[in-house]
Length: 343
Image 1: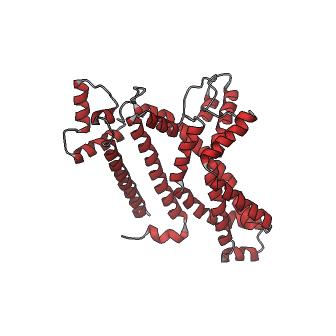
Image 2: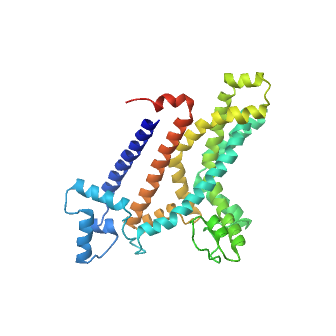
Image 3: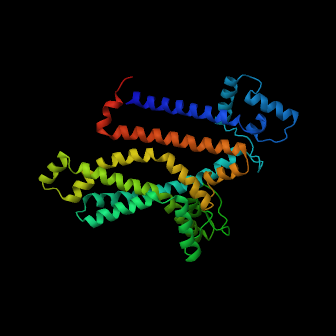
């Protein structure tokens, strides 16, 4: 078990190192001076230029420069934002919680709706129900996320006026950041309008969360359905039925836990696509997260913001993918041999 764990840790560091090498190479291809791309200081003084050169070892060979680049970035030195002239690391800490909040809510929506519907699609004997669910998931999977986001904004935001279509909360509410998660911060606030602020933050979250949840929802439904069809034909399920156990008990205690194993694996596979969709959703709904922050940096040629945004998103995808793979292998009886495999 520990051997497999350390293999996954080594894989994380190796993948991170490769990603940093690509980012380091891309940084030196920016059409600006190296010191400017690395620090974000447009007109550095002689003293600042010497300090930047010393930090990033600009007078040394490429290997030493790369090691210095990795050291500076992981120590929190991501430079200054070219446009705001604020530390990029501080801006990143501000926008990360908003992206986490949106992704978490969208993932929970997809999971808590997708799994039951997938089970219904697998166990229902009604062909109309089965084909309706499969048709719905195919349609949801095929719809471009930008079109879906704009359409939902037009219907429920502009035409009906039911939901807000931009931002995280009404600017009239002054909520002091505590955790960075707006829904939690509104409840923790000591202001007299914390409940209305919570409701307003929840209303702002509905449209972007639903838009982002559509892709994982469709995949979870289809994978759950396929997994349940396979599990329900297993010998131990037949034995449980022969013992007279209630169908609901068989599904909840025996079939569903085993069917969730391939669902967990699929979540790890779709993380990259989910992150790309998240960036698009944040731009459409002006959500103050990493995605919209990164796209804004690209438009404004804010090279330090571009590096920090790519670095943070990439590290999260790598870490979560390896973590989910490890959990999947640990809980899957069929993968136990991999835990004790030797290279």
